[in-house]
Amino acid sequence: MLLLQLLINGLQVGALYALTAVGFSLIFGSTKVFHFAHGSTFTIAGYVFYWLYSIAHLHWSLATAAAAVAAVAFGVFMDRCVYLPIKRHEGSYFTVFVASFGAAIIVQNAIGIVFGRSFISVSTPLSASVELMPSLFVSPLSGIAIVCAVVFFLALQVFLMRTNVGVALRALSENPELVRVFGMNPRRLSTVVFALGSLLAVPAAILTSASAGLNPAIGHHVMLISMAATIVGGVGSLRGAACAGLLLGMAENLALLWFPPQWTDAVSFIVLFAFILFRPTGFFGRPVAS
Amino acid sequence: MLAYLLNLATLICINAILAVTLNFILGYAGIFSLAHAIFFGIGAYVAAYMGLTWGSSLLAVLPVAMAVAGALSLVLALPALRVRGEYFVAASLGLQMLGLTVFAEWKSVTGGNSGLSAIPPARLFQQELDGPYEALGLAAGCLLAIVAVTSVLLKTSFGRNLRAVRDSESAACACGKNVAAIKTLSVVVSSALAAVAGVLYAFYLSFINVESFTLDTSVQLMAMIIIGGVGTVLGPIVGAVLLMVLPSLFSYLPFLPQTEVGSIQQIVYGLAMVLLMIYRPGGIAGVARQGVK
Picture 1 (cartoon, helix red, strand yellow):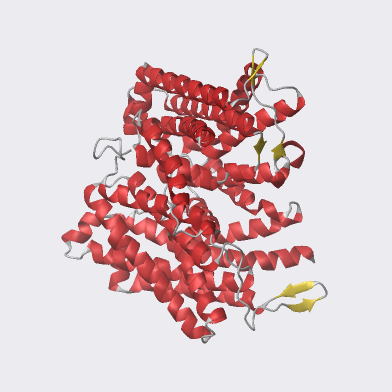
Picture 2 (cartoon, rainbow over the protein chains, first blue to last red):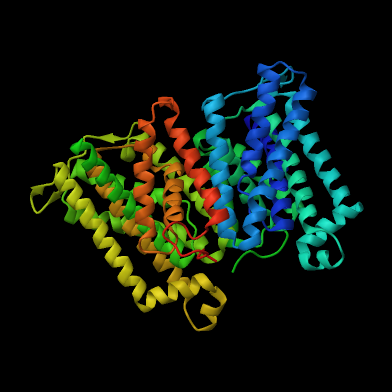
């Protein structure tokens, strides 16, 4: 029974990881920006929702919309005001990474000052768990998380496959020069990518705040998972990132059968490490090994 | 006031050692490690454990701490050999998280979250080094020695190989360089030297716990060398001085609430990192536009 419980929890957590990881992978795959502040997007969305829903008592749909606006605004701001000026004079990953990392530190501490450093959680009517079978507790949020992940992922796939902008985005990841030759504006496309990628973190952040809770430092954990999922899934493959996010969530929860909960980060690391050593190309996608 | 300045100077020396050793792999070999605080921690825990069980003779503790950190750094070297750049950052971030969990959970050796206290001061040739001047002298001496060692290493063919690997791994490989060996060796050297800072830290403070070896420490070290200037001899030291002196200035500003000083410091580091990367990626001591490829 414990196994079943952990499987269900793993599925829920994994679905949320998959959403954030796909957002990160989308940004990295098409713009080549290692957006370390993606974890901050997650934190911002979660805290905006918490603030409006739990403290200001707004309707959940308004709070969700505001969280989405905040996340997209932050992503686009980072692209326009930080990455773009850097890429204009120097393209090295190192410079972009450091700036992104600096932004993540600012967000984490600013949120810590405003909301405190301890865990907060949003209680919603859906948060309460129901006992489905003896000692098997499932909250409606698990179902919502899985449905959300599937819906968002399918919508993204349709967008990338069927719309002109989507096709241009895929072209951007293959060959930015060619995109420019065809008269499209890579800068505008990169804004779209950042907006989309940041948007994908919103449902994950809100559902996490309602189930496990948030703290300002959660961005690092989200980032580790997103990076690990991108590598484990195979760089450039959104499908891979989604599967890997699911795998990491499951691994984290199933590990509770043998290890105490403090070891969750360690489990993600071991999965990542095993993939780097034994299958650096990930599930699908291009090799990352030198 | 004098005691305060001596304390600050000693801590600056210890942090400068860490910054110099991190710069050795980041600035010259292009290996971007977020796990440096772990090797600092390994040095500190080895020193504390040996000091509490057998005695605190530096001549015994230093080699053991360096050997342990060097051996464990092979774990970091493994992914460094397989993947480049961004992917290695993920691996080292994971290692930092894993190391911290081990420090917090291996209670019989590390004392868990409450840490280890009453560590005896360092001894050198039967002489206890417990005064503030002795501690500063020891830390400054070690810093000089480590700057000398790394500078000499960088002047040899090994140093040239390192830079070759940083600038173009494929070209270095094509020239018949053993890229794997060069990278592994640089990681081992850097981690072993970082452990020296850990040993000094544990003996100097006589108390350590996991708080000193978190991701925040790794980030702060990175900020030091980035703000100071990556890939320069002076950069990490300038960065260490700046980032150690600034906090004390912040705590003197009367309009800042005392409880938020730590966060405000971090925000300033973050802001400095963002703005420097936009306007001056080479850092303060670096020549303009001398970033890592």
